[in-house]
Structure formats: C-alpha cells, structure tokens
Length: 338
Image (cartoon, rainbow, N blue to C red; front, side, top):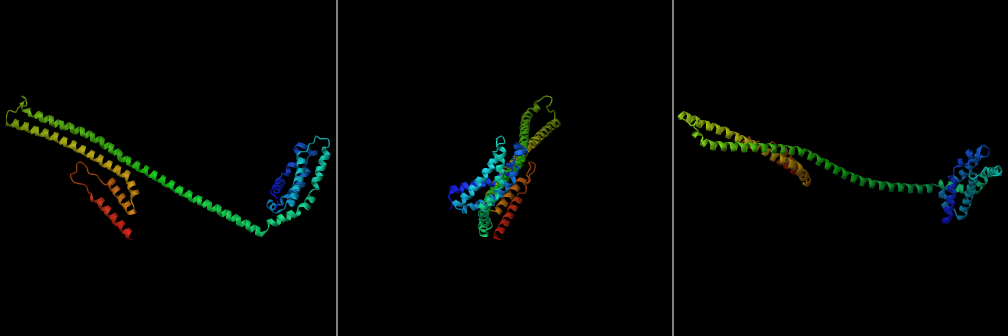
C-alpha cells in the first residue's frame, strides 16, 4: 500500500499533465513566426495521451516506488511545458534554447512509453476487468436505488404537504364562496329592516291619527256648523264617523301588517344567513355520510323553503323538510346495514 503523501503528490502531478491544454504552448501571438512553439503542440499531445491512459483509480493499487516513477515522469514533462510557457524571446540565446526544448519534446515520447507502458497496460486491464466493472455497477445501482428511495420519500412528503395545502385552499375558497352567498341574505336583511322601520313609523302615525280623531269625534257634535238638526243629519254624522274610523283603522291595520311582514322577512333572511354560515361546521362535525346528508338537506330546506308573508292567514307547508330528512335517515340506515 502506498503512503498517503506520495499518493496525493503523484495524483496531483498526473492530473496536472492530463488536464494541460497543449494549444497554450504555441504562443504565436507573442513570439511571432520565428520563435513560436507551434511545432511543440503535436509532441505534447502525444505525451499527454500516454498519461491519460493511466486512470487515476489505478493509482490506489501501486506501491510507493511505482508512484514515484509515475510522478517523476509527469513532473519532468510538465517542467518542459513550463519552460515553453516561460520562454523569453529577448534573451541572448533564445533561438538555441528554443531548439533544445523542441528537440527534447520531440524525442520524449518513446522513452516515456518505455517507462510507463506497464502502468498503462495495468490501467487498461483494470478498467476492462469484468468483476471490477460488476462491482462498480452494483455500487452505482445501489447508489441510484438509495437516491431514488430518498427522492420517493421526499416526493411523498411533498405530496402530503401539497394535499394539505390544497385542502386548506379549497376550505378557504369554500368559506369565501359561502360568505359571498351569505352576503345576499345580509343585504336582504338590511333592506327589510329599513322597510320595517318605515312602516313602523307609518303605524305610529296612523295610530296617533285614530286616537286624535277619536278624541275629536267626542266634541264633533258640539261644533255649531256641524251640529245635527235632525235625525237625518244625526245619521249622516254617525255614518261619517264610522267611515273615517274605518279608513283610518284599515290604514293602521295595513301599516302594522306591512311592518310585521318586513320584520318577519328580516328575521327569516337573518336565519338563512346564519344557516348558510354555520352549516359547514355542522357538516365537518358529522360522524358519517348519512348525517352529513341530513345536515345539508335541513340547511337547504331552511335556506330555500318559501317564507310566509304578513298577508297570509294559513301556515306554510312545514312537513317537506321533515319528510326529506326522514327519507335521508332511511337511506343512511339502509346503506349502513348493507
């Protein structure tokens, strides 16, 4: 087993050569046509290709001596690349130095391969080892499976959170819809309350008119120009009093009935508003589907059943709601027994 320090230094040297960009050696832009290193690009690629055939995973199997051999070769060749990158054309022996570097680089490929061919062969064999590939494939499959299980669990949690958020959104939307519908009944309550107050004022006025005329009629016969002279005039005066009392009484009765009607309508619509606002709480508190249907049917009957008016003497039909509730109870019992 190789020591960690040697393994790390060899890995760094090998990676540095494998990832080196050989096109940077040309330097045509700053050295010109005479002193550039365009000829060094091809030999440098040949060296880099040899180093790339040594997989990094194979370094784990080499000894310190073998790692030192690979590391020294990689450092030496990178040093040649560094000389090209640091080459200064202004020096006195620039042409000679350039020729020496190019010669070294062009003749480097074969000696390098003689030094590293066994490591290249081992790396190729290691890469194509079926048992090793099978182990790596199993490890990869297990890793994918673990990640998929983790993602599946995260998706389940996300789905639960999404369902909860959707349920909350639906509940809020339903509450908003119910509140919007209940506002119609509230508006009707306000209108009916206003009309009831108006007719209550008329009722007070007509009642006061009846009272004033009743008091006034006690002294009506003592007025000189109205005082009856005979039986015919007496009969006319009495009939006039009855007629006026009848008209005032009828107006008082109609005003009171209108007041009663609008007040009754206000109370009924208030009751419908409350039923519409509270039925959801009753539905959510119900234990089963049958009870929920009963609550909904009763709430619908309370909201949409026709209301009595102040001018009708009979009672409205009140058995339909009870009948529908009984039918639903019968259905729910039948379903539960099934």
